[in-house]
Amino acid sequence: MTSSRFIITVIGSDRVGIVARITTVMASYNVNIVDITQTIMQDIFTMIMLAEAPKENFDLEAFQQAMDAEGKGLGVEVKVQHEDAFRFMHRI
Amino acid sequence: MLVNPKEILETIQMIRMEHLDIRTVTMGISLRDCSHPDIEVFNENIYEKISSRAKDLVRTTNEIQSLYGIPIINRRISVTPIAIAAESCRSQDFVSVAKTMDEAAKEAGVDFIGGFSALVHKGETGGDLKLINSIPEALASTDKVCSSVNVATTKAGINMDAVGLMGNIIKKTAELTSDRDGIGCAKLVVFANAPEDNPFMAGAFHGIGEPECVINVGVSGPGVVNAAVCELENPNLTEISETIKRTAFKITRMGEMVGREASRRLGVEFGILDLSLAPTPAIGDSVAAILEAMGLERCGTHGTTAALALLNDAVKKGGAMASSSVGGLSGAFIPVSEDAGMIEAVKAGALTLEKLEAMTCVCSVGLDMIAVPGDTHASTLSAIIADEMAIGVINKKTTAVRLIPAPGKGVGDFVEFGGLLGSAPIMPVSNFSSETFVRRGGRIPAPIQSLTN
Image 1 (cartoon, rainbow over the protein chains, first blue to last red):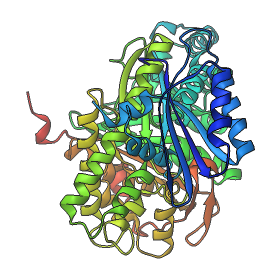
Image 2: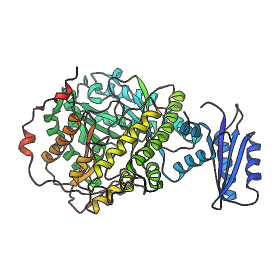
Image 3: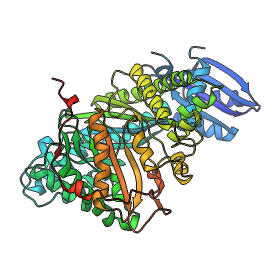
Image 4: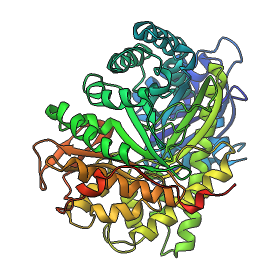
């Protein structure tokens, strides 16, 4: 693990308020958005965020559970994964 | 964006749709300092050592699983071959050692513990024989213990006395677990050129050249390779090979990352990463499906060995580029019962035992999870083992045999093991006897290619 940055992906049907509600949860855990992109692929809403978590006193498990619960409420799948999972796989 | 969205979605798809997983994080633990003449003291020593070394293994791997969002399917432990560690015990058998291993594995919360093993490629010591003779009862009276016996190496040749003995041990193991279709045999492997750092079961043990404690990682992903091959539009075989190589590279990198993080958090040396396409009964997570995606109507038809050779080689090349710690078996597994495509191929009459034997010349292991009739003679099992050992010894590679002579069942019947072990149709064996050949015993000498010094 080289940083405290996470990739957050939100995948599901598009509806009003997804970005607002997901980012509200992030704000409550002091998680900052470094970069964000979103697309609609075949009616599937896909949002990808690079986010920075606090270096200390950050409860990853609780954050993941909160994001997962918010996603379920919205009918979308939310995943929070450390950025290394993506960097390592595609880059040397 | 700072990270390429296309790459992110590719990774997510591999995990969500194509069954990419870390098959196992296996902790190797040396038991060499546990020896004691009193087997009860020995058992206390190994229980203490395994439980204390592995106490954080499950918690740590769970944390890594959620950190990276990649499933880690199994946590396992491998130990020094018990025939060596328990050699000095003054007891008639080692069944109590297997039971202690089982308890320690349960205490640690792991899925399997391997190392109820003996290395007898050139001959047996007293401890080796005690261990081998304890295998049937040990596997029948434990849940998590796996056993392996190395009966051949390229340097030593094939110990045919041990091969003969193992036919009987397999039969007895099946009989003692006849209420569960002989499931004990699913936890018993006979090896040629067994690797000392393999994280996969049932053949994992902590070799005698290994450090005190080590983390080895097994990563899988036949579904990912299959999806990548299927996506190509009318490819030639060079393009297929290139795609498999690239995919293997990506999967291996994921395993390397998990292994290094597990090693750092546990304060234990990182050993090897083993990228082996290990199928599961899930649809699409199949090595047979990859071979069929290359253009074979059914796995097992003519061309299958060539297709598997391409696959196995491309997986190794991709893995070798991705990590400098590649070891273990690294390649493609072809366990029949664990691969939905293989099962279908057997049922369709496309895949036979003889073809599987040919396939083992070019894949990473051997005749794996094959159910044969319960009344198969022990000497026939030994002869099947001898053939497979010869392939390994001559080709300087690991080969293994995991046969299940399913008690009371015959060709046309099915065995059901459940979970990762899957189910298998009973396959016919030759009706002609090999008994006189097997009974001769002795050693098939090391081949000329062993004289490399």
